[in-house]
Image (tube, rainbow, N blue to C red):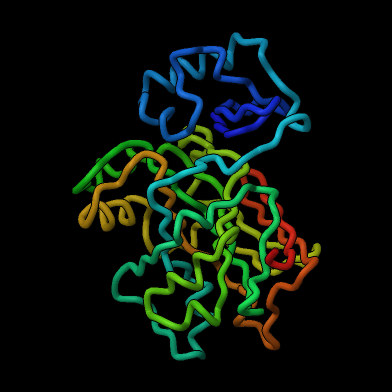
Amino acid sequence: MRLATFTEGGRTRVGVIERAEVVDLSVNPDLPTDMIGFFGTGAEGLNAARSVAANSKQRFALGSVRLEAPVLNPRKFLGLGGSYKSHLAEVAHLGIQPPKFQIWFNKQVTCVNGPYDDIHLPRVSESLDYEAELAIIVGRRCRHLSGAEAGHVIAGFTICNDVSVREWQMRAPTHTLGKSFDTHGPIGPWICTPEELAAARNLSIKTFVNGELRQDGNTSELIYTFEEMLVELSAVFTLEPGDILTTGSPAGVGFVRNPRQYLKVGDIVRIEIEGIGHIQNRVVSEP
């Protein structure tokens, strides 16, 4: 299934995407209208959603609704750095070595943005960059996962632009400030469940800026498995339904190019991941 958060008629709720329509799950009063609550219903909720999708006539054309960030209020939004072979190769001349361990950083949850909403060029810096990433959405509360268990806590996958303000990112090893500006976490357009995206480990991932191809990679370049990522994180803290874990970005980011190609006001950034779809965001001045 493809699960979306959408707004129609002034109401925001969860739906299932089928072809060019969204099936409204709120026709079943037992299903929560927010994605975190929906994941909390577990397998029972997924089965109920499948039943609604198969039988309900409460459908809207995609063009008639507003697609929101699939998870509007996650408790955690984490990013993994240095995880793509091609990206490690392109930064090697800067003296950046392959990591010995997984390098995770926080994106503050206030950066969450919709799949087609504007990105702000900050008042305090012009070093605005893009990073196309496949994101894991956690489906249930978990801690101390084993490798065999880890795959079962994945609710699905979505697209993320890990928008980065490089000047602020480099202020501290944690990277948090440069990764957390408001609007700098566009995700969506929906969540593909694992059965919907069986080939998640071998997906084309591309970034276009004003139609120009900037990143052209594949998730097969990842140096860690999804299970390894979940085992690492759950050894430290509890993962919860709706947590967003972005898995890293392939070669082609703006700050490594010669000359550097940072984003400017008016630029249109489109990220495509095979099997999911695309998100597209326009750069505007911070209001």
